[in-house]
Image (cartoon, rainbow, N blue to C red; front, side, top):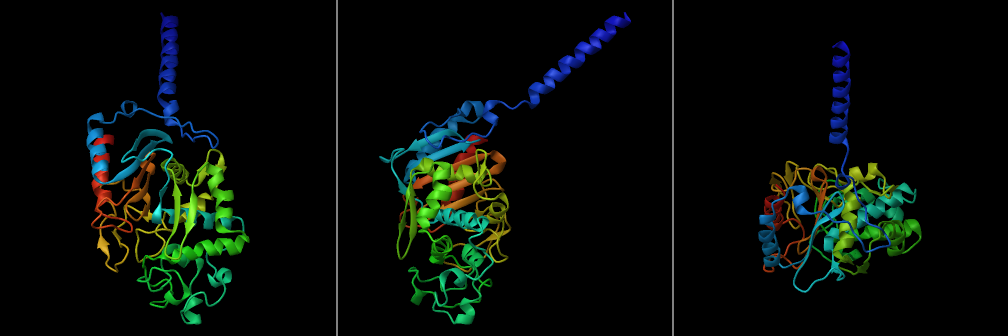
Length: 356
């Protein structure tokens, strides 16, 4: 009898261990996936395998069409769960990122810093030369590369063209947050620090590393990246993984974490050209008003986002291991926006109906 009890206990322990092994063993869909840099194939995952509400998918699509969307992608753990194209747009068509491309510039700055080419705490004039603005020299010398990354240079933000006569003094660097196109000077910082055209350095250090397509359009008003939606998704996947692509750390995790953290105490919802959810207040382009509450109340609290004019979006939600891409025309053509708008909250309401 005693031997039978011992055998029973031994077998029970095996069953218990086996059960625990099954519970903690990740399934293939739980591991992070990175698409090949040289192939167009991209793994997918079904909505049903995630337990999502398929009845809410069509209302989401209807909303996207109504809001003039051209492409929409949801990734979970790097796999495509939804990929939709509207209004004649296809997977091979390129579209402008608008200011969502600022995050590409910030990432390139971080790469240049980790290569020892620059230091974001140094004066911008160390890389741009003196008198790159029309500010008094003592005020220009207050501006660091970090101020360019955080929209706190103190320049007049009402003038769109980034030319010297328009870069005039309003406040000391670091004392005023104001969204403007002055960030474009960061491309000159990289070019001068690396002794290469910005696009050449970007292509070598970022674009080719993660298999993106696309190109830059440099203008006096806007510096804009154009690519397919899948290339936007690739960058979102890099951002979800804190700068790591497969087994290569493209940009140091420390700098990336700085990028998605509050960068100054004026607008807590802004990092290094990234927008941040879950903070106590936020500001928007073209205003000095401070709004209380979260940037996008319906979105995950830990979300960080690349936001561009006419609702170009990369939403990164680490708690859900999810990336959402939206490209298209302005959701409200009568009221185009430069960054966050009511569209974000309305879209996340539709997304939540699907994923919750």
